[in-house]
Image (cartoon, rainbow, N blue to C red; front, side, top):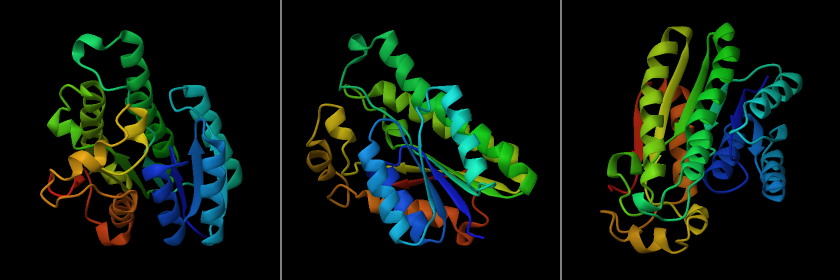
Length: 245
């Protein structure tokens, strides 16, 4: 029986790369998406071509009822869950503190923090009886750098994810569940376009010690290692993948 991995926000970018890497690593894959159905279909097809059974689930992780329905579908299709990549996340337009609104902050924290916590909660409820599982939370180096004058609200959500990762790891370690985070630096994905800065990764990537932006595949490789038996004594840590930034 193949293990099962859920990847949230898997229709593009880092999530898509993680889904395809999980399939190649021998997982059956749950491809979660919110609005990009065509992207999710393409990812699922590629994962199927790699030998995985796939389940595509539309769910906005900001909606608790949608999370519940998603896990009901996972239970029905597979009956078990072995790994989660908590990747779903959003960013607003680049802004200063004086431009932020309650609605923007509410949406960012609902998706990036509360949604991730509720997904992890549902995963733990399924993993604890089996006494095994891995949860990988996608963070960001912005949690450390702060993203002043650009995305301080996004950075704050990722700071919360780092703290949650450590706390959850300690809480479930004796249940056979490992929890870790990956903090990407500047990665070439569409999230920069969504934030109104389509050239941001290429422009700022040159300032990293390695002199370039990273790729979604490089993040997926780090996630793959953390999910593997090679990382069997790794929990509660955040792995920075940022070219030294």
